Image 1: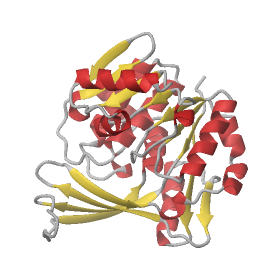
Image 2: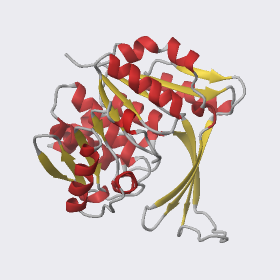
Image 3: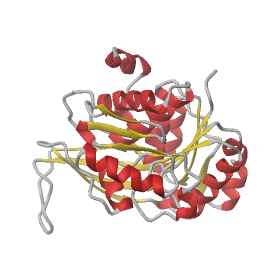
Image 4: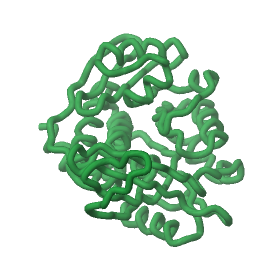
Length: 305
């Protein structure tokens, strides 16, 4: 029987331009294409999980504007319940300005969180059961800190497995970190959280030890096209990435996290779950966009064969 997953996080509209190169400070670059679509780390992860056949509930907040309508329509089209998508009376729906280098597929992103940075105690009271009754709780750092900390505490009190994707990276109290079961930073986030620069698999191992010393038993560090380093209390493994032709790396970390919790919910161990997340992430970078690039379950299983 599948375990229930609840994801609390952001919905943000992606405004993406592709350019011949990323602009330097003060430089104007003529763009090649522009695309607007649904995004936000929480939303991307929820859609990735849903398309991978996960039993997932999503909690977020949008503004009463056109972008908020886009959010609600997106979730309905994906088959996600909108029961816990709150609407802010004053703040606009979040936006992300994304520039993608058309040659290297590298990106630069500026996020304005808007409404999803104002998830209140009243909102959390409404969705309390969704957090209390889940088996796996996933959140990131793109919503307001009070909501993150309160929801993690509630999930911990009710014995959920807590997965924290610490992005966008910021300081987290050690009291909260000690409640986390699995942390999933990328190499940049792991470097900032530990003060130890992560470039190689061996660097990831050193950073993972530091994070475990902070009280987090399981560490999963994504290393881009190299793959993912996984360290539990008892075991460690490096899992190579799938080789694909990348056209847009935006949202790859979200794809990984959505796939990772999906596999966990099916009873796979942390290493097999990381492999499944790797496959989902690999497929996501072969298409342009974030949420629209998330693959189906059939596509994931075909790649994993």
